[in-house]
Image 1: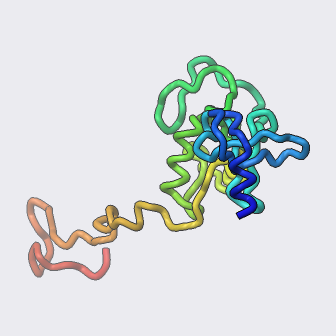
Image 2: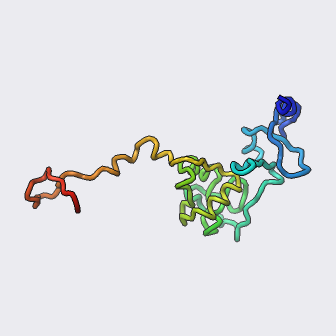
Image 3: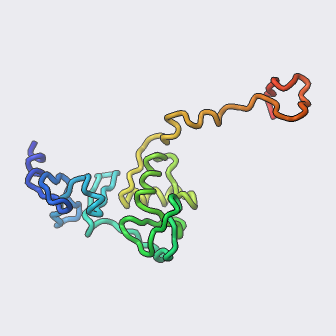
Length: 180
């Protein structure tokens, strides 16, 4: 109850309203914000360990080898990412040449879950997941969403019919072989 009262007195530095319950984890920083305001304020929340949050000034930043070229496209949506690193554009830390939008990689992470989340281009998992989590991409610890709704169940079924123009199976078109 005490924390709720404290949050009621804190003003969100993004929207200006009271009730900002999240404070920047940088020691000495007094900026507070609402979780829904975090993206507009270019804040980062790390969804692991202590679940720390950072304001725009103290958030961790990627250190790419080079800035993206002017015509660089997001490897997910194929839209341009611009010609500079920003809060909204990110680079794969493993291959250092594949760029994507923060929103695009966040959607991929939410759908893929921890087991299947990796760089969409170079397929690195270890370095990529660590960096994305540090940069505020929430990767849920669950199975991929496409396994939950059974969309790909048909891919596990074996074709049981001979589709050749002239069937050479001695038992006919409806016979399913146990192998091959």
